[in-house]
Length: 221
Figure 1 (cartoon, rainbow, N blue to C red):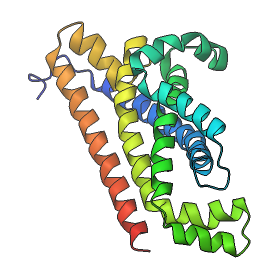
Figure 2: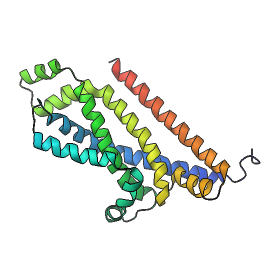
Figure 3: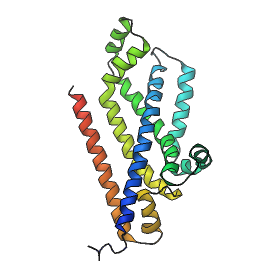
Figure 4: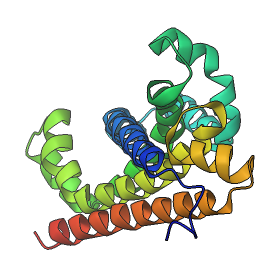
């Protein structure tokens, strides 16, 4: 085993795994926190909804589409001054989280909006007919009915964030992507590249399997 992976420092691999998990956990939590209400507002300001506003919905849609369409590697570089102002550094796990959130939150918001559009219109109208406030409509009807779709969207977003954390290694964010670039690519250490790619694939599979299980659980309720 050591002969096949002679360039692999397993202590560095372990630390890189910890860094990648920290980036994923921190950025996913903030992405869900910001993306969920943004998706709800996108839905509520859409045509035929209770906050229908072409101006507000159009402005939000433009902002979301701009951020979604920007290549993440370019967003990483553009956000370096903002990241430094927010967290004091553009390096390491802490420096990677702001661009990860900015890149993923609009993506998740669109998935939330799509899930909410799948809620039966009759259910919405029945809740409104009972005199429910907007808060009640969102918390007691829209979100519970759309929960499986929202969890599926969160799973897709988490998988996307895994690939984003790998790209963040380009600007010194640490993690498995950083090892793959510094050792696997720049120093032509193929064994390091294989180990880091294999671990990223395993992480993606675990995230997807966990998300699918949650979707099945809440779909049966």
